Image (cartoon, rainbow, N blue to C red; front, top):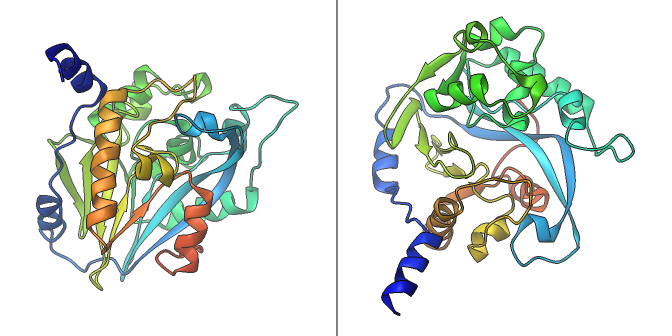
Length: 288
């Protein structure tokens, strides 16, 4: 490989250097009972050609659910992300081509958010935050919702949709924190800084009481094939730090191949969600 080719290759991929050993250590750092289960819910879906979902894909339609996850403790729950209301979901489509929305499921998610001990928002995109930021009881939810400094800045300065604009007063009602590479947010739960899909994007590691491990890759890849093939998204509207995302996909691919104890969540992969429910790796009903 020539020097020019080496530079070009480096630009195409920025290595992601997260250390699973350190992440595991931090998961056991905070005192308290470990979580006993993880549940997931699908509140809506987008239908996209596979060629938008993964580079080099074909025209097959891919169902991409909009999800949230619940970490269950013996004495309460922690929500990872908050889904989105129907108006926000509809803002991603055209009036003549509405995409699937499941109001009964969103109502369950709203009850789970109300009952949660803590809510963690992984990044500022509408399908991850609107269930909190658009809620009628926003003040009550904000008091137990945690966001990074980067996410707070995005919510204030670059809202994902115009109708999601927030005032400084509203954003400051959230619990805002900053950290380096990793942050233990609750017993058995560690946030992993993974900027690339967005400037505030984070992954979430969960160590369960029975020894199982779950890694929520959030939106590094939209479907598991992004991770298996180490291929990024190709949707023209997606503006990512592509070299950073490719490095994260390669790291996730290594975890997938070398860490059989780790169950990986991919937030927009319908078939993978179904497979995890069938194998009882995650539950499909939220604890309310």
